[in-house]
Amino acid sequence: MLSLKNISVKYGSFAAVHDINIEVNEGEIVVLLGSNGAGKSTTFRTISGLNKPAEGEILFEGKSLNKVSADKIVQLGIGQCPEGRKLFPAMSVQENLRMGAFVHRRKKDEIKKSLQHVYELFPILHDKKEDAAGSLSGGQQQMLAIGRALMSKPKLMLLDEPSVGLAPLIVEQMFEVIQQINREGTTILLAEQNANAALKIADKGYVFENGSIVLQGTSLELFANDEVRKAYIGA
Image 1 (tube, rainbow, N blue to C red):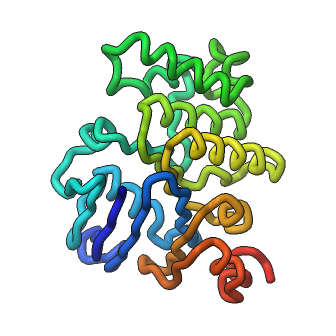
Image 2: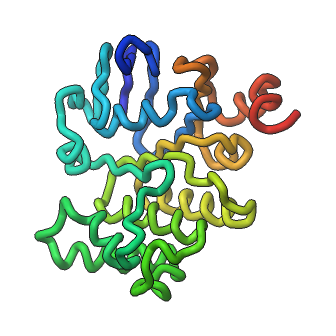
Image 3: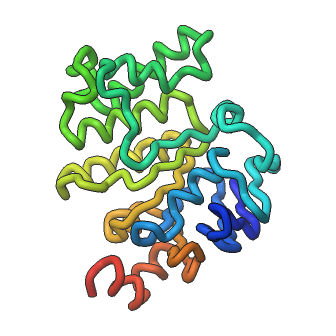
């Protein structure tokens, strides 16, 4: 479904990501593991069309994304839930969700259905639909960010560090919902520092260090890998 082939991304002369290869098959949950600054967010921004690769090719459903604009990439079916949530704090919960459906803005009935679906996944958002997004707790804001990404009806959803700064119980709930979204037919690419939570739900993963992929394998293989355990799980 998504293929990154020998992708390098540069900021000036600095190579933020160097020669990476990633495969995401339809229906999978794939995790990119790595500490802050390892290259995960740059990779996501490149898939979304916000950065352009210096080398290599990105294919989505067999079509090259290298020269496709960010808004067209959303229309093709890739939705991103960015790191730091990037909500509109003064706007209400419902207004934020409607912004996520911007690419389908002429399809009123579809938007209504999508809203209903998000409220079923996250009942608390329905209770607070008239509240300003900025007034929500961290966990609720993350739910809203995921819900907003879902409103574009993505085939592939990019989730950038959804567990950052959240209490363990909320993280657990969040990952259960991510699994549910996946079961309903959305393929998931997840960037996470919380390897323990991510590997429990992922099919496979890639470990980033200094802009390169240093390890890859199924979740079970990565979970059993001593280096991964030491670095991300606690031995």
